Image 1: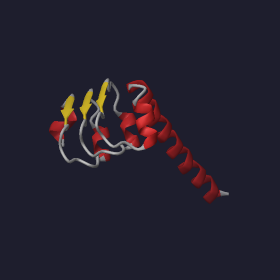
Image 2: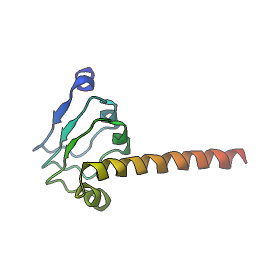
Image 3: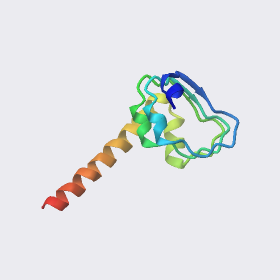
Image 4: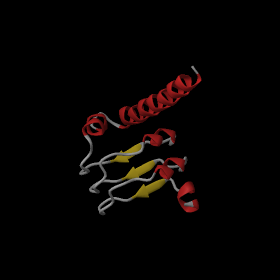
Length: 102
């Protein structure tokens, strides 16, 4: 994983890959991720933490409807989607903590 942490471009296209590990979001130098023509349906919401991301290729992937819709609008919309997912998850955790306290 060390080598991947310093990599800027990752091409995993045209293979039977189905899942992307959350650890990929720790690759903060990543600018290009090509997953085209794989079997990826969704990406982890933690992809929001990858700053400087400017190219994401999911062409030919059987994406879940929500991700497919935002992906068609471009990288900014896609990263905003991951941001929204992260904030919703954080809100649910905070809400659960308050329920335990009260």
